[in-house]
Amino acid sequence: SYLLWVLIALTFFIALPIAKILDCVLGAEEGEILSKNKLKQQIDLMKKDILVDDQEHSILKAVIDLKNETAKTLCTPIKSEEECFMLDLQTKLDRKMMQIIYEKGYSRIPIYDERRSDIVGILMAKDLILMNPDKDNPTIEQISSILREPSMISKDTNAMAALDIFLKEKKHLHFVTENKTIINDKGVKVNVTENVGIITLEDIIEALMNKAIADEMDNDDEEKNNNNVNAF
Image (cartoon, rainbow, N blue to C red; front, side):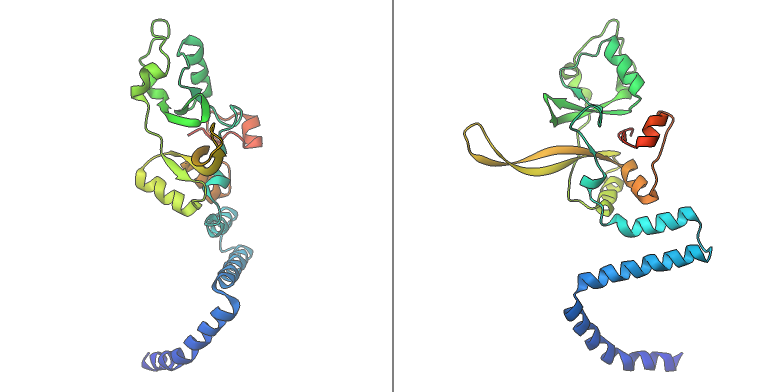
């Protein structure tokens, strides 16, 4: 109504200076944290009043915290084969290796050159469908033309920004990079960018749902431990 807008206009010139003073005294960041806590309390009240179910309650609270998650906290480390299945560029694609690839059940396999952090591409399992392991036994390097270009993302990228990157680039996984300072063979300190993990769209969805996503390739131990998350 007309009276309401008049009251808003009158109080605006009083409220604005007070708000600026409070921001200076309390700090904008602290105010943001408090607002998030209050929002979580409201969501808890909504669940208590049966306005949302358990799943909706979990998702709403996860969305609030998602911005605090980073690519580093959500990714799967690539240090060992137990954590992430990868293949060396010199791997021979014989019948035994083809059987291992089939049993693993991954659609995308990271390929590295000697060091696991030196990613050179992604092997799509579907690209091997026409290969005859009894006749064709090439190394991955010999068929490197079929490898897909790897995409990188900084370890400090927050989950919301990472989700936006996934949607824009229409890719299912990115390699998480970290800047490090090392000493080279000449004893000189140099800055290098190293791959430290893999983050998938599934990782972000799991963080959003606050629940692990199991597929038909997951066994009971994987579901319990929730360790193997590079089934993209």
